[in-house]
Image 1: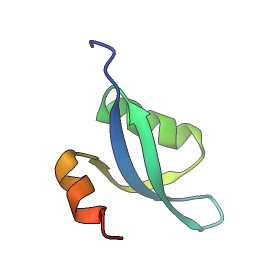
Image 2: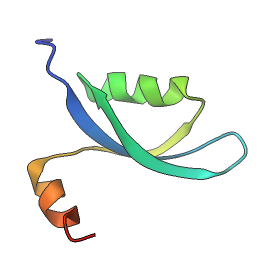
Image 3: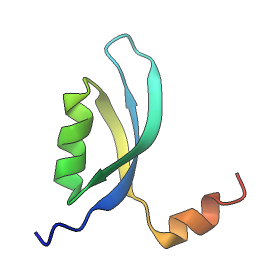
Length: 60
């Protein structure tokens, strides 16, 4: 990898069943998944955050 970090948006739950959404910076989706898992969260969905995503969410 070239060391470039990408931003990933995720939805996950903790062991108590509380739902979380957030972002994580990683070189790849696999690295992002690992970082989320290391937080003790079970992943529901993950998506790379792109300029297109930003344009959609700017109004919220």
